[in-house]
Length: 83
Image (cartoon, rainbow, N blue to C red; front, side, top):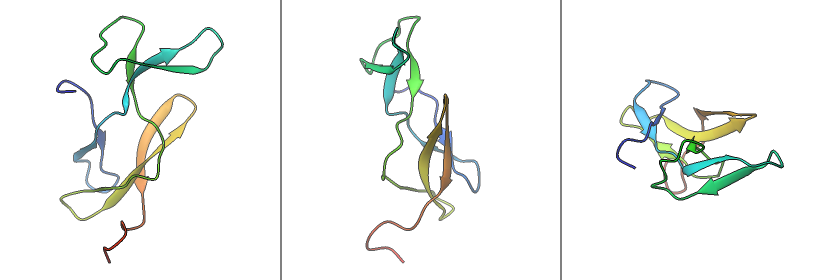
């Protein structure tokens, strides 16, 4: 995923969260995941909402939030074992 866009840290804007993979909207209006290396004209980078958290160099803790066709990073609680 070398040329993949990254979601920025919610606090400082540092490119922090890599995409989950690539995919497209199917005929039934459901999202269909495709091959990670896919470069077909129908697929685009996508993020999947999960419990995973990402700790930025600035110390902020972010996670992915998705609504409709948009993914963005939001503030998250610290990962287990971290204050």
